[in-house]
Image 1 (cartoon, rainbow, N blue to C red):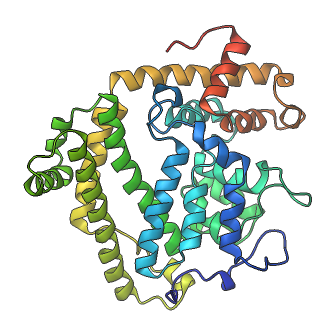
Image 2: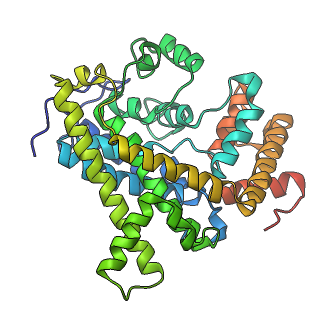
Length: 376
């Protein structure tokens, strides 16, 4: 398939921070994807929470399965829009590498611990992972990914951190947060594929957990439309098959909506190349009606799943674990591996170490350092 002129072409990449001889059989973005898949941080995602803690059930999504779902959705949409599938896949697989154990609860707790020391942002941490914290190569720290992959990984960034990054890397991956332009269309696509994926699988996991009653979903126009459509075509269908088919149709409708709305936006903007697309404002988007329905779905999940008393109870316990680990390592750096313990920026070293933990390793360390038990 030939790429659109406004797609990110690997042959026109802005390159890597450390120059390397090109690979003989892979382009820059394919090489990025392979480095991400073989990284330690990527393997850890299998034991990191999405919504439900890793030990709460074998079939709930983890950061790894979520990343794979984002990559699948992203590639499907990219193919239809003639964007670069390999770049989309690389960004999707790496976008959550900086997430803490225990999902957003862990992130919030770590950010609070780091409030007087630069804070903690998981998107910025994902960039730190691929730029600094992976130690796999002899000539440099990090994975030495291409500019375009790194740009897509940095999905959000505070103004203060963007200015700091820009000072260290002029006209680099944080520049767009300073001049308020957009990332590549592939990065914009990953952002939307991320939203589509977690909204759909959180419905599935919420019902599977028993925290969301499938009948309660009838108040969601986006879901109910496809549930009724499913039952009209398959009136004898019952149970989870109805849920699966309704979610499948809902996902397909969102994918086709993004393809159609983006095609219209791109035709209107007529960007000549990838850089022109960055300056044209957001171009990968939902239609207005789908955006409203997607927003309603997010509000539903926030109210009925993320704020469910059972989830909140686990959330508070997870925050206590992160706080205790932070205080323990700060008081005695020798409790950390040498490469963290010997660093002079003690607070950031502790944050980096905790952020890299899986859920179950964080719990084991909490029990070891405090003598207290995790209560399931």
